[in-house]
Length: 152
Image 1 (cartoon, rainbow, N blue to C red):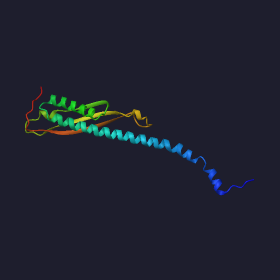
Image 2 (cartoon, rainbow, N blue to C red):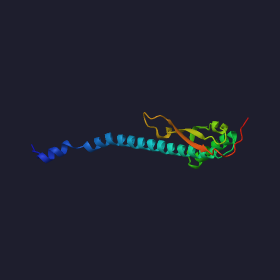
Image 3 (cartoon, helix red, strand yellow):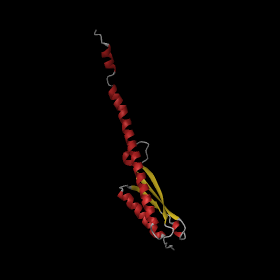
Image 4 (tube, rainbow, N blue to C red):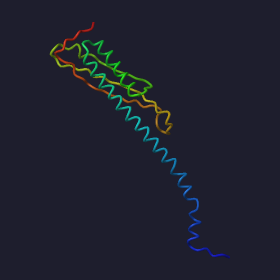
């Protein structure tokens, strides 16, 4: 009978442990990486939607009447999202134009809200929804002394 040294016995006991560690650790690391990608996408989409709301509010506040302001704000928001290559599953641009009814000399503003539903289904992460909705809001002042046309 052959006697094994202590080093040989310990070597045999550890055999296959690296494979087991890899089998457990790799899926966890992959899941963590996918969660980071999903969080990054949501954050970038939020920044882009905020930019779209800011640009839309500024464009709307420069117009002279409510109808043109609403159309201009919506168009600029859509164009900004397209320029930033953000594809929304659904998009909502709200441009309330109550400020255009204010009398000259009275401070008024336009607040634009942009809601974009972003698709995350291509990541297929368990427990993460297939879409997320990001919202951006920005208020831009209307020049109180600039002439305005009231819409009927």
